Image (cartoon, rainbow, N blue to C red):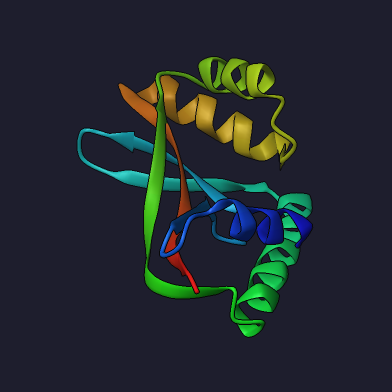
Length: 134
């Protein structure tokens, strides 16, 4: 919440704060081929979900204090596309991703990609909101 108060102070009158963060839910892992999409599991993002809930509580607090006014918000799916399980795992390692993936999800993904050309997709919700300085 301290950071939001600092942002309020730093913004000029009628300045806008853009807040973009994932929805507090587990990302869905899918295999997409030319003719179908198969859900194979999820990424357990319990730790991230807790942090998102805390951030939203802080935002609700500064809104209740009248520091910002919600102008617009929307949610949308954000999909990451990977050519293989290994490409996805390398991406996660590079980004130091914290969510965990069940071994069954990885094994099923590999098996499905071995059967037919396709891609591994990770789909999660994102919320974007614009707030005007009050």
